[in-house]
Length: 119
Length: 107
Image (cartoon, rainbow over all chains, first blue to last red):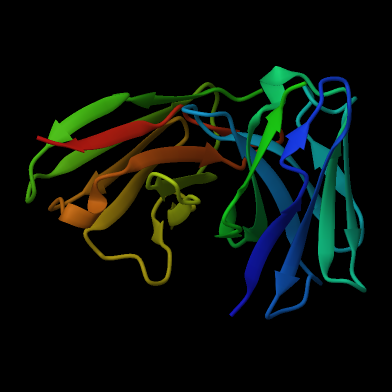
């Protein structure tokens, strides 16, 4: 079955760039949208953005100036970069598949990657 | 942005109880409403999509209803495995937004 796995740096210094990659295994990245959702410690879920298999992107307006999401279909991966991070960006970052069937919902999720912003 | 307001923020219930969680959107979102369950240390799991469609593999004691601005997640008979936090999410328009969550605890 299709599985997602986040990888990347778990500790990022303030003002630097957070980088995460999600590897999709057991299926093709094609024909779907792929998203990033984050969850600050003890808080709720926040949508970060998504990318389509063809490279179309969309992200939360509050993060748009700092976010870059890309897809590499040859590697079956998609990636998140968030620059100029602060402590407020500390969170568990989940990658997920955005499936459209009457409604757009995240039907497959990675296990999550904790990213801490600290000097 | 569309604001999603869930209530209550937490509740205590016993095994076998009927539990209802509500989610209200700040504008009409038709049926573009999904429900997720999250347990501590785990990723969320979709339960209901398009307001009332049960995701494959989800037990039938979960159900969803509503359209427009008001939605409900119902657990008809609470099971031990159901103690978790539940989130609603709208996909009517971007930015995609989630409710703040409802924590269901053991009474």
